[in-house]
Length: 215
Image (cartoon, rainbow, N blue to C red; front, side):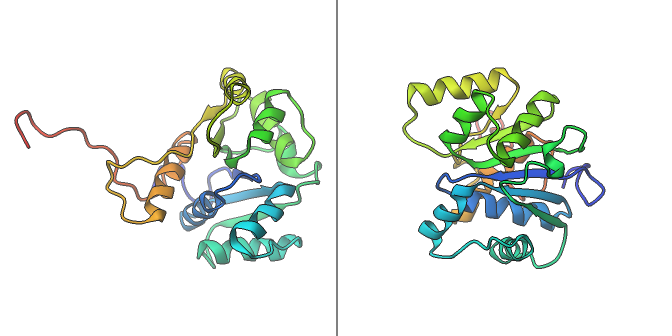
C-alpha cells in the first residue's frame, strides 16, 4: 500500500462508462475501499443498460442503494468511503476544479466517452469531471476496452494523451502468472491506479531477469 493510501488521502474519482468489462470497475472499488480510500463514483447512463446485459442485474438508481450495490459486488461491506453521484448532476463536487482529488480513472472507458472528451464536450457529470481533471492539470487515466481500434479511436486517444491523459488499455500481462480472471483484471487495475501513485492492489510486479546464466 502506497504512502498516499488511506482515508486521509484525497479522494479518487472513478468514472464508469457503458463499455464492456464492468468487472474492472468492481475490482477497483474493492481494492480502493479495502485500502481505506474515499471513492467518488459516477456511472454513465449507459452503465445501467450494460450491467443488465452483462450480469442480468439491475443497477439501482437511488444513490444510497447504488453505493450498497457496488460494495456488495466488490465484497467490501465496510471500509473506505464510497460516494455515488448521479450522472446528470453537473453541480456535484467532482464537477468543480476547486474540489481536491487524487485524480480520476475512467474504467472501463467507452470510445464514445473518448470521442466526447477529445472534442471537449461535457454532456454529463462523468465527462465534466474528466474535463476538470484535464483543465486543472490533474491525473486523468483512461482504461479503454475496445477492439479493434479504428483510426478515429486512435486519433481521439492521441488527442487526449497530448492533453495530458494517461492511456492504460485493458490488456493484462502474463509474467505475474495469473491463475484466475480476477488476477488478469487486477493487473490492469493496478497499472491504472499506478498512474495516480496509488498502490493498493496486491500484485506480483516484475522483478527483472535472474543472474546471468540462470535458467
